[in-house]
Image (cartoon, rainbow, N blue to C red; front, side, top):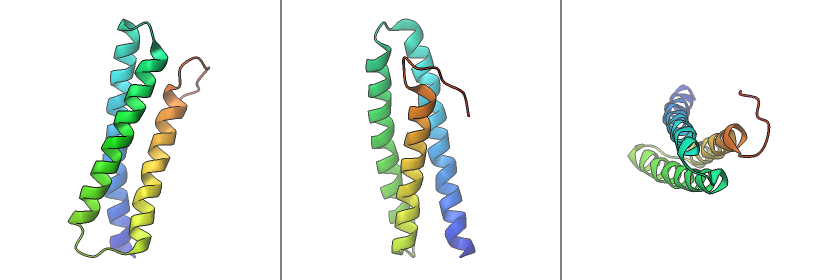
Length: 97
């Protein structure tokens, strides 16, 4: 069980780093672009694709896999996509988490 949690935690670090990078890039893009919604959607799409790619690679690199680990990794992807959306959705008052 401890190994399972360590793997999920390691993937969470990867996912959080991707969210932070996209949030910073989106902030930079919003200062130069007029259409903040388009920039947001582009970053959200790219982030989703990157998380999917990293999750697949991460799971392929694990010697022992089970359904619970796969579910936890995909749930982590969803959690961090939601976090990005909450932090960065244009046109709404946002409270930083």
